[in-house]
Amino acid sequence: MYDVAIIGSGPGGYVAAIRCAQLGMKTAIIEKYDTLGGTCLNVGCIPSKALLDSSEHYHNASHKFETHGIKLSNLKVDMPQMIQRKDDVVNQTCKGVEFLMKKNKIDVLHGHGSFVSASKIKVTKEDGSSSEIDTKKVIIATGSKPITPPAFAYDKNRVITSTEALNIKKVPKRMIVIGAGVIGLELGSVYARLGTEVEVVEYQDRILPGMDKDCAKELQRSLKKIGVKFHLKHMVTGVKATKTSVTVDFQKRDTEDVIQTKADYCLVAIGRRAYTDNLGLENVGITTDNRGRIEVDNHLQTNVPNVFAIGDVIKGAMLAHKAEEEAVFVAEYMSGEKPHIDYNLIPGVVYTWPEVSAVGRTEEQLKEEGIEYKVGKFPFKALGRARASMDTEGIVKVLAHKDTDELLGVHMTGPRTADIIMEAVALMEFRASAEDMARICHPHPTYTEAVKEAALAATGDRALHV
Image (cartoon, rainbow, N blue to C red):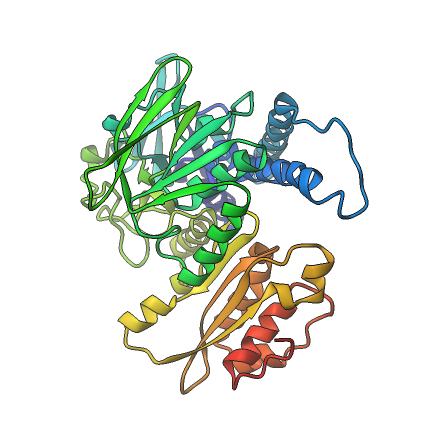
């Protein structure tokens, strides 16, 4: 009998397992695939960042090195080596998770987990054989899968998702990306920097819906410079693939004029859905919402008292670090502690170049909530550090309460903003003001000075370098 069994070994699942084990629980983790780590580690966060980094090195060598006084000849992309490096990074990280399971004495069971009852889980291996385990509590951490509408003719060959886009062995000449969200823009930018002609089709009137509009515009401007074409307010009406190419039909929302484009690949990146396939939820009566997500209360508890759910399989942002926070929360709640998560302070990041990051509310949200606020902006091009590294694109925007000066949201597009955003997260965790942010001494020259300058701009228009 286990104290807890966790279904899924992604960032939510394996972190939950570690924290449960640390708290003295006899723990099992069930993973259907051969490797641990889930989507994030195997076909998501980690491999995509490896390719993003490789493509950025190539792009810099092609477009910036000569300005730095570095001259190269016969520069070319070795795609198989690039993929191999990515795979090596993934394998190394997978082994790290395996080590953590052994270190914390967590039983790893490979196979598909499904409910027999609320306290009995069936584990079915790939060869069809199965076994059952008894457990006092269960944490569902099965994550999500890409949405692939039948009309898009997803074939894993020419019509692909992020999973297949990580393993293209030859740089494509042309690629169509359906969806201008985080995944579409990240992977689209990888291939654009390697020389692929990339066209992005988006139904909304802007890229990155839900993120700050100014920051999204900054990124769109940067992506256009590397050749990415955007078709905003367009809807896809047809996708047809052959063995060697794909044809995509799309039209502007308010017209009937159809545009037909042919490419080597069509990347479908219109979102992800909660993965609850064949979990046996009906065997225990666990309820889901109209989008297939498992319903939970404020303690991440399902309607079945001993079953919890975390990460992409429940409501909220589909982020690895959100899943990790929920993993620790559930483990500590089950052990009698009183943990807390402030969902408003979970940062979001887009790992393009320049990067986009954000925490807290956007201007649109503040307006909807009727909260009066003040704004401070600062461009990276005014920073000496940004000019020294030739990374001058982007801005930092600080939003603070009009009367109390409390930080309400911080949004950035620029170099290394994925790391810089943590300054804002930490300050907002302690309900700091824009004045507090402005008064902190930032080292010079650094990218972080843009945060200080934006805070100064928000508190009486005091920015020093614009």
